[in-house]
Image (tube, rainbow, N blue to C red; front, side):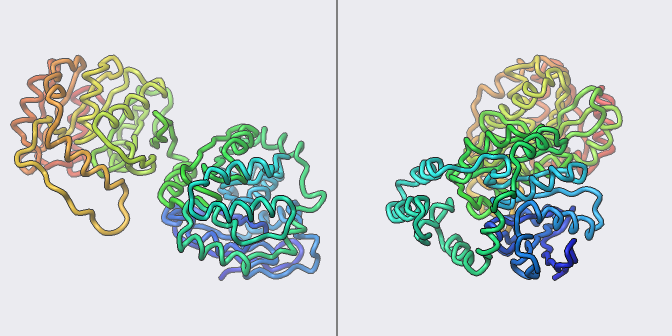
Length: 504
């Protein structure tokens, strides 16, 4: 495990997890060893986590001066680690009490912070401590849990100043399962309680100065509370997010103080999307949708929509070429990639995702290029609101005839998937028995349309694809012998077809 020497000669340890661009992670507790952060759900698959053991915790040395445990005095440790890593700027994540240290670092070194993620922060540094009333109100959200009465009584007693009792720990987790119990049991041996007392001591915070500094901070800031957490509750987290010049709030549903344990996938998708400078988000009907942008901001827009099981990265080659002359938006539909996975999927829902992106970003009249399932959703949108779309490209789009024979149940592949498997049975059910009005309204598509077919190796009935093209008044049909994945198997031919169609 690597170590470095900080400003006062104390040797501090840090632990590396995962691959990618570094993300410096400040643990909470206060003063809990970074081991409890683990892989931060699945975030280590997206970023190289640099998990710092604060002085006097984990594998770091105990300092000669105990007063150096105070939160503001540890800012220099973060700066020493940044310099040790040779980074000009850092992405910084702080959890719980550690969010205060992260905020004080950003206030002291605003030019060193690229992005700041505050996970279930207790915003003492902003002068916004969670109140006992807020904590107990959040606890009462769990009143239907079998362990609630005992946990609530223990929590109320501790908040009233009585000695802490382990029974209340269930309230800190969205799921009180064996993993949560093991995580809670480890806290006692991972925390330095004497250092924690100093961490919060008099003089640690100057809330007015910190709020002023955060109002000037250029870096994007994510504030992520759990829906069921009391420290902070979502309302307090929203007030904290409002203190930042570029603050955004994302409440993780059905989660407590350790959201990466309660729903690792939801946590990872939200934080990974925030940390990726190429990814932005928009919320449509309560669903957070991620999308990637490239190209000149003033260039004519084109929106790319993937098929089932894909995501915005499927368009990498196409997006790179189009970005030379276009502003390219590549969307992750709900249940895919870094967007929310809410469950309950349909062509209509995906249609609404596309509509929401176009309307909220002011992209009415943009060209729309969509593949397979995304193409069917785009066709439904074009039937309903052709004015939202300039030109429409339907690549290997199912023509929405009932499948014969119908698809039966499919077995989920083993391992991690880049999309919610619930999409598969939901969409197969609609493909087996589609609403006949969908194909009956192809004639309502009143925009120039290019239908791209994949030829005889595609699993889509090519005769029905040709029929669909014949029903759309301003459609032309192009066949590129590539199978179903035309834009990935033969990107040059696909781009030529777009160019001839006027998308260049």
